[in-house]
Structures are given as C-alpha cells and as structure tokens.
Length: 485
Ligand SMILES: [Zn+2]
Image (cartoon, rainbow, N blue to C red; front, side, top):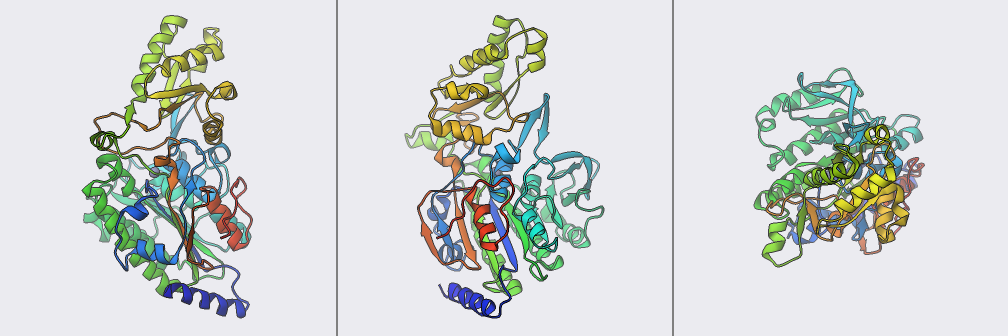
C-alpha cells in the first residue's frame, strides 16, 4: 500500500505540472503456461515479486481466453493485439499452408542475426493485426521504442509487434540470444556482450532450470539500460516473456519440484526487476501488467492418483487410424493430410483429383475421429453451425479459426482430456477448459489502484485497457473492452 501512495503522489505531481498524460514505460510480462491459481497456491514470500503484485496491483481474477487452441503463439499475439486468431492470423504455434508446416514467426525472407548456420530468419509478418507497441509507435509520431525479450522466438517477436527497436530470443542452435534481419543487420553490442558474459549459463539446460528465468530478466534489464527505455520523450514499451515455466511444466508436470524452483526464482527475479524499474523509471512512472498466454493441465498421473477424471488422446495416431478407414471407403490414401494439435487438414488436392465431395469426406473423417472415448465432438468447421455442440465452444472455435491457416476439422475433447499419453506426467494445454483458458492478470503502477475483481474479463481486454489508459487507438483488430475498475 505504501508503494501505491507514492504512485498516486507521483501521478498527481506530474499531472499538476501538466506534463504527463502517459507513463514513461509500459512493461508487459507474460509467464508462459502460468495457471491463474498459481497466484494463490504458492505461499509467496513477503518482499517477493508476486506478493508486491498481489498487494499493490489490481487483480482480475476471472480472465478467460475466448478462443481455441489455447497455445503460446496465439496467446502472445492475442494479449498484445486485443484480438483472437480469427483477426490476427496466428492460428497456432505452427499451422499448415498448402500441406507445408509453417511456424508462427518463421520467415525465410529474413536471416538470423547472431547464431550459426542452422539459425533461421524470423519476423512478425504472419501477425496480420497491429498491437499495443505498434499503436504506441503510431500515436507518438514514431518516437515510442519497444523491445521484446524471451527464450522462445514467438514470445519475443509477437508481443513487440511490427515496429520495435529490437526483439531478442534464445537460439538453441548457437546457445545464445539472437535476432533477425527484420530488425537489424548486426547484433547490438550489448546483446553480444551479454552472450559472452553468460556463455556458461546459456549452455546449460535453460528451458528446465531457474537460470532460464534469471537470464531472461537479466537481458531485459540490459535492454532497459542500453536502449534507454523510458528515458525518451514518448512512452516506451518492454515486453518480457518467461518461457521455461512452460517447457518445464510440459516436461515435469504442473507441481513438480523442478517447476516450483523456477517459480521461486521468478518470484525473486520479479522483485529485483520491479526494484530496477522503481530506480530507473521511477515509482508511478511505469505501467506494468503480468499475465499468461494460457494455463495448463495437471497431467493424467496426478489426477489419477487422486481419483479425479482425466484422459489423454494422441492426435497423430487418431489421424492415421481415420485415414485407414477413409482409404477403405474412398479409395484414396492420406485424405487427412496433417494435424496440428486439435485441428486436422484435409488433402484438398487428393479430394479434387479423385472427384470426391469435400463435405462427404469431412463428415466421414469427423465420424471416425469422434469414435474415440476421449473425443466429445469432431466437427467440420465449415459446418459448425449444424453441430449440436454448445455455442460457447463453437464461438471459441470460430474466434480461433483463420482461413487458409487453420484446419478443416476441429476436435473438442471430453472435459479433462489432454493431448498426449496417459502415463506422461507432464502438463499440456490447448483446450477450451478452465485449466487451459483461465489466466492470471494483474496491472500495477501508473494510475492503478490496488484491488481485485471476479467479474468476467477476457484476454482481449488487456490491450483494450492499456490503450484506453494511454489514450491511444486500440490495435486495429481489437475486440476487447477496457477494464475500468
Ligand atoms: Zn505457452
């Protein structure tokens, strides 16, 4: 509360001077696969980052993702653009275009900057909507500067938009932070120096160890210092995404000692980083929000051990089995060409060549996929309105569907079922279920009064809220509503 009073006094003083209509800096922090209930299941230390956020921030306790699939790339794109895959085009971590798998940020017209021969070019070009950073850039006559930092490429690239000063991510090939020619032709000295200085840590298993979190915030701090974010005449932006919370949960489960150690480190790093912001930018001069790109399940063995409903489904195996049945009926091999998680792509070339009816093939494929106990509905997206599926789920499929990138068929699991194998302890996500779609959301700092609400809010409201507070136009695809409490 003491922090909050300083924030208010600073805001009043600056308003009285007629200088500030916007904060010096907006900081957007995404914790990959952070379930909402982690805010309350961990007994956070006094003085730690989470306790500071809980005490001094405004908590939206019922923030939901309104589309499927609830996955990383779609989440990072949606948080910052205030819209969903139907309007920003990031329909998954990867998707299929004419039978070719494309990663959300892959861009072969660009080259990696830093890294080695195996490192690939990346860019935000597949993101077809603008986001908060882009709108800030436009609203400030291109003076606003943004930097995006994460271990995962998509988690650095999609939040920082089309117009950032830089975006930096960890490249597994070269074990270093790199960027691409979309942003610059030479790795800034401060990033190259950071790589040199931290060589040993960068070569460790950073996706599964707390040091991954430390390196992420350490690089963000270097960005803050070296790019002089928050020191210019316009509002700047820094986006940070913590990726190892996701990878470690996938590998070890939602409540493993390894994952716990990463969250405890995150608590320390957040405390340190908030302190750095207070010192460099000034208490009350920055607006910070923390959220997640999606939640995650508890994994089947943990649920089974405690007699809770669970299950798992292997999409690849289901596709192969369905293809056998379709071949017997239509005489054509591989009529389902690909699957990406919950979405299945029909082989339109083979369907047309054989003179088959797409709808007939799709319906036969859906019937086959839906035979599994773990599947509640398999629907042809073009025929969605004729399905008895409840409209709340239909709406989420529609909001997550981008023509030309999403598949022809969408599979909705029985409640509590995850992708993968039942014996696998790791968590997963992607479904409409609360475990995957309920995310933490806390705002803190500039013009934020501590408090909380359990009113239903949406991932798409985050960008709407930030833009409304800054008095800038919302991103061009934004469908969210500002949270005004
Ligand atoms: Zn994720």
